[in-house]
Amino acid sequence: MGNLFTMLTVRADYGQNALVILDQTCLPNREVYLALKTAEEIWEAIYSLKVRGAPAIGVAAAYGVAVLMQGVEVTDFESFYREFVKVKKYLESSRPTAVNLFMALDRMEARLLRHREGGVKDWKRVLREEAEAVREEDAVACKRIGEWGLSLLRPGMGLLTHCNAGHLAVSEYGTALAPIYLGQERGYAFSVFADETRPLLQGARLTAYELQKAGVDVTLICDNMASTVMKQGRVQAVLVGCDRVAANGDTANKIGTSGVAVLAKYYDIPFYVLGPTSTIDMGCPTGEQIEIEERAREEVTEKWYARRMAPEGVKVYNPAFDVTSADLITAIITERGIAYPPFGETLRMWKEKTF
Image (tube, rainbow, N blue to C red):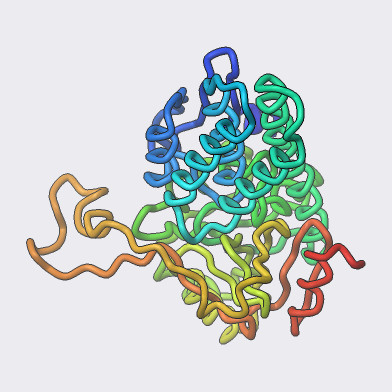
């Protein structure tokens, strides 16, 4: 485990005024770190999934705006704030579905506005401190999510996960994978089935990679094999992450998640959604209001092939996420506990911290 968690997904290097990321598009074959120094480089890294995973995107955005503002030299707050807003709005346009991106940037803005006094050095320091707080709180939240999730599991269980919601997607333990890592540390001997997660193969390239590196018993399967392993009785629980949770418990996650939920419901297998409370969007009543990002057709037709595997000119529909209805979800697990249906009141209390 120690070797795994030395792979820092995101950090800030203020000596270089750079956001340093592990380029996840190079995995599993190479571990490549990039030093990003411009808003355009950071935007492109988020959009192209060089850094990905809802919490990691939030941390990257917080560090990114802090790094970019270190180079701003003005004497009055209004000018500094104007530059901040310009950067913030630009980074927000990179990934529309992941609520952590917006939450982290809104948090950075709120902290800056509370510290108008002082000078440019103070404003820069405040942004550095807040970005670090975002990262530290994410790491603590992930460990707590893991503890709550593990309380629902038994040693020796077969688990299935979709996409990547592990160490690479957050600051440390992950969200959906956090109970698996804690179980690994405590001798639970889980057997994990990792969906490959078409079309970008996050399950094959990332989840299988990090679980294998941590010594977890992991088996990679194609997405369309999930029904078979469930029918064979090899899966006792499904663990997935989330990019946005609506006020009623509808959940947006990587495309294919809702199909896994339908299968789990049919085979009477618990379907757990794990993520920090920062992914809960109480301003979004249901999943119908969640904006779903659509991505380039080339990701489906040719990205992973030596030659294209679809006819030229064929129409392609490539939504990056789908929405799992709340009635398919057994429980939503955050750092604050476990919510069971109906989810609305518990989610509201968690966001308002009235518990």
